Image (cartoon, rainbow, N blue to C red; front, side, top):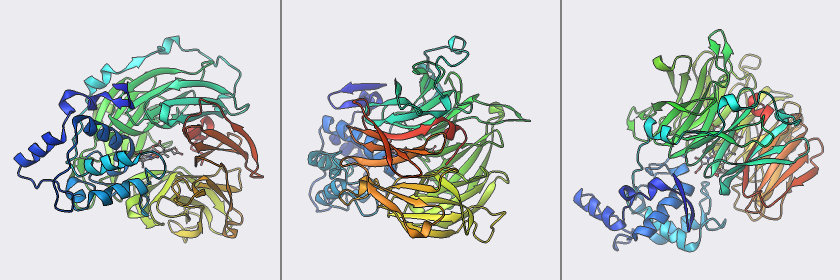
Length: 554
Ligand code: DHE
């Protein structure tokens, strides 16, 4: 379903005749429907795009914009950019915003080299036209994409190598649609697997034997770490746009579900899909089209954001972004599916467990809040403000000398780390309120710590200041208020995302660039230990250690 043409990979459904719409067709449709024609904010004529320009713009929108603004452009992490809104602005103003970014956290796509001036101009026109609606994707079409490259019976019974699987890392090579497996002990590249377009995350299976990946194109793959050179052993395409995947982790009185199922969360169509955890055969589609938690208005595009697998019940905890609901999806009986739908806050994005793995702490980033869900009592606890657009990734949990167990987030909209109490039993007076704050190197994406470490690592990937997006700032748990130790880690690219090794004494980060690198630091001394380099390291982004991912160590 993905084809390569002169512009690289494209989703082929967007090339199909049914979805080829010239601006002329759109304008005609709009006129027939007696809706106001899009203008340019200056009273001049509606923008026109050739068929080719429209397709180019559609692809750029899918690749760079839809994650924040939504396929239908109704807004989420980014604002509503429907044609009705965009025609209130001039093309020149729109082009500038797209090229330079905004103070509210939108990247300057031209400034950072991802889009040319011509492409920024093109996108300015595109957003003044009505948003094309992508097609649906049902089980039959998904099954047609399902491939088992190595049947379960033919997979090795034990590891075919002497490496420590628990200290292996999965690393995304974003712009080439591949995933690398690296040996965390000797830093050797073990293998590179063909995953999917702009792979977003890796998640390890509950046993740690498999790595699952999900690409922006909705392709889910699994790799078998027992193999000497792990490759994709099964794959399916279950969404047209996706960001999340996790497996079933529960084993207890209600059954053994370890690695039995996988769940993929789609951005488009708005749905989640249950798959066989061993073969990735799609089994069940659960639509997320529903109403917003507060106004109870129907939403046509509630996207699936974070998925976290519960350790204490046979269920996934699933964040439904636009409606502001967290769904507890019980997978113990798929034929008679039960779900608990918890009202939280709109525009849920990313999050993870507290240290006890009872509470899910998830960012409602456009509301500047963290929402807390108690998965034992199966109910909403509270929500509280932290800063401009919290973005915790999976988050970070540690013991503060004064406030006891705490958790923390960085922010997309400002260079701030906010620390909040997360121990309602032992320290109820500090629970779910911000107890400490410090400036980081700039607006960032991720932070990370490890129970054995005294450090919390933060990036500043979204910083607009020259050089600041290559900065790492590290805070001390036992002296947080002293502020961070910061340094510029690379003369080029951006620094993004951290992961610890299994032992908790090394930290890996990525120089996010076409000529990418992985920098490995000694966590105790903050000194660089080594750099993993090679032509294959193209735009490395997220990286996951098997042990830490299985056990949700962060
Ligand atoms: Fe991500 C996690 C969505 C941009 C790298 N990203 C997530 C999750 C979601 C999400 C919903 C949580 C998954 C989970 O926990 O189950 N990301 C989005 C977007 O919608 C957004 C803002 C825009 C987009 O178009 O995709 C976006 N993300 C990015 C990037 O630009 C990053 C840096 C590189 C890329 O792939 O485009 C990026 N996102 C990541 C990473 C994680 C992630 C590395 C996992 C963090 C972890 O520690 O587990």
